[in-house]
Every structure is written in C-alpha cells, then in structure tokens.
Image (tube, rainbow, N blue to C red):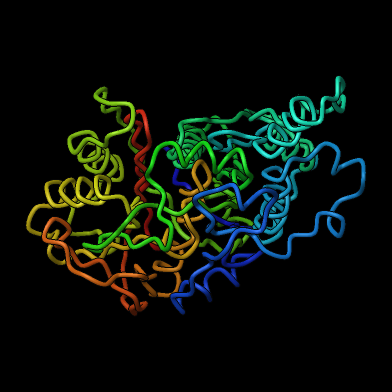
Length: 402
C-alpha cells in the first residue's frame, strides 16, 4: 500500500473564496452566517444561512460556461483551480491517464432545478434551456473538472447526503493508496441555498432561526451553508520526488451504516466508523489530538456524536479537543466534509484548533472539550474528520501531520 499526501487545497464558502481567507476566518472565530439574499425570501420561515457573498459568475466564466455550470459546479471549478495550482501538478500527457476525480454532492444542481420548475410551473413556459439536464446532474462538476485538467482515470460523483464529501475523499484515498491512481482531485460541493432548497429543509424542522450553536445546551438546530472544498490527493513518493509541499498525510478511512433510521443518528454506527478509521490508519486513540466533529447543532446529533466519541476514545476522550466549524461556515450538506477538512489542515499545519463558536451553555450530554468560542494553539500529530449523514451513512477520515 502506498502512502497518500495532500498537495493542494482550495475552497469557496461563506468564510472566504480561497483557503487562506477561510483559515484566517477560522482563527478569528468569524461567522459567515447572516440574512439570506434570494428570491422570495419573505415566504420562508428560515431566513438565515451561510451564503457565499459577492459571487459574480460573469467575472469568472464566459456566457457559454455559465449556461453549463450550476452554482455548485462554479464553486467546484474555482476551488479546484486553487488546489491544482498549489499542488503544482501538470496533468497533461500520460499522467492524466493515471489520475481522476471523485467528488461528493448530495443534490447537485438544486438552483437549476429550482429556476426551471419556476419557469414551467409558475411562469407557464413549455420549453427550458437545452442544457438543463447536463447542468443539474450530480456528476456535472466531476465531469467538468476532469475535462478542465484532462483527467482520464476514474471519475465519478458520490451522493450520500451529508457524508458525500467524506465518502468521496475516502474513495479517492483508497484509489491512490492501492495504486489504482497516481493522484486524484477530490472533495465536494453543494449550493442548496435557493427558495426550493430551503423550503424542503424547513419541512424537517431541524433548522435554527437565529444561529448554529453546536454542543451548547441552548442549541436550536442547524444552519444551511453552501460552498466547495477541493483537494489533490497524491502518491506520497511521487509528491516527494517532485519536491511538492505536502500539507498532510491521509492515513486512514472507514465507513459504516447504521441500518436503523432514515433521519435519527445512531451511536453504534458513528462509534464503529471512528474506531475503523483509527484501525485503518494504525493509530492508537491517544495519537489523535483533534476531531473535527459533524456537530450540526441539533439536539440529537450532538448528543449522539459526543457519546460515540467518548466510547471510541475511552479515557483519552477527556483530553481530546473537538470542534464543529459549522457554526462559522454553516452546514454545506454534501460539501460540508470537504470544507471542514480545511480545519483539519489548519490544525496539522499551523497548530491552530478552529473553535466551536456560539457556545453559551454547557450540556452534560456533550461534556467534552469543544474548544468554545476562541481558537486554540496546540500542536497535534493526527486528527479525525467526522461525517454522519441521514440514512445512517457514516464516513470518517484520519490525517497525520506531514
């Protein structure tokens, strides 16, 4: 088995339009959550979200590209450009045959769906744009990334609700580790902040009307976000030979299924995924210094996740730092694990633990060190990133300092 390096990182999210700006916001504990700016917002009962502000597609893409790129694809391509540029990889020629792309998204082109349903049902039009299907399909972003960089190896999209990105990155890791690919562009994206997307989530009654406060006793629900996180996973030896700057090592991955309930989280499934990632990485629980928690800010998720962490880590749980960065960048649904992996890189590269902002009241059911409200300096050698999705689909990644 080959070692796997991360050699590039890029993002677009409510905290910033690149990784450097996002890391600065995480260090400051800044929130990207605010009033939503979208059509018919007055008809929504939930009017806040972590929206990507000042996004002007016309300054980044030409008219033909905009006709093909849904918002989630736009985010993906800009984040991918940042990641590939940082990695220094040139995929032209034979290496492109040995590289691919695996991305996660829960719903794909939701904005395109929303706009065209309006066109047909509300405005009474009988025709839509001929590119609607290739624009809204879940695999659109992966296809456009593969075409942009001439990646002719394995390329596809994973859709496992809120664990989509972690599943995608885990599969990319396994491909590089096994030798099936030399390098993979991976991560995920979501752009569900449109009228229809929010209205659907309102029906679940899990959204907060004021703020996301993970692990706090007065938490009132999750806040939707949007964005993309994209990374280059590469054979370690290949990266070393070309003297690439290695951001971190991907050391392990595990995925489990609760097989229990379509929406309620399950402690056993989460615990098995955490323990499986540790085994796969050949790491003792004591080696982990930080866990980026799924931490949605809902009553059920936070309680169950803390119980799973306590069981999986045993006595070490009392010395473990965990935080949920969703209070800053929102819950980016299928793209959330990829945006959150940036917090893991921040911990490993700079020794800064991103905080759980909005924390106000201790909850006895969440009695772990949640790094409340302010970032903390701490040198850690290994971290975990948790993702636990509706449908009981769990995916956990383990990373080590390079």
